[in-house]
Image (cartoon, rainbow, N blue to C red; front, side, top):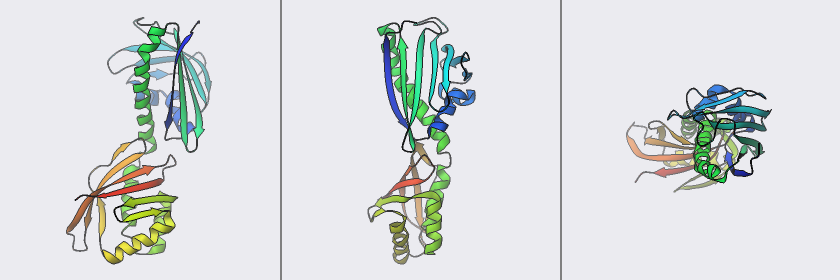
Length: 254
């Protein structure tokens, strides 16, 4: 194929390449970011099929697969418009970026006008992709938030440190109107100090967490030892691809 025109888009996803790549090789995961009924045979000569939620269908053939690194497939529309099946080529490459994954997509076309029609489409589709991957990687976000709040009620310093090490990186940061902390070693005694000044205070998650690509919002209610409400607020958690908390910012509702 003579494909002189291309679009190139690079994004960073908060997940490891081994996880990201499964969304190109497993049909159920492939469908999760394209649409129900979409399938892929992740081998050279395998069929690639997409059924968008609006009913538009695209298809092509898998050209190359290098596990966790690269997949290439042809692409076109069942209707033949604006291009017929198999008449363009998509190459997706993955490379580690710390704990994250840098994804580069190149889509090659025979006509500049058709390429231009796909620029916003890929901007949108890769955004959907990033969220679908993150939803899997951070499916335990609510439990992490609950464990974080529980650690603030733990009165034994050694047990508190052990609990935090299970859910947070050793360099975890915490910031609110009363805190500017870096690392578990700084956080453990700080929590102890809050317990002296606010004895018996407990934070409890209020409602479902909200999550987008590794950032989690968790509303909370603070209650005293008598069970009466003392305040409300929201924590913003930043999560690492290995499932640990790397930073928290707390907001009291005034």
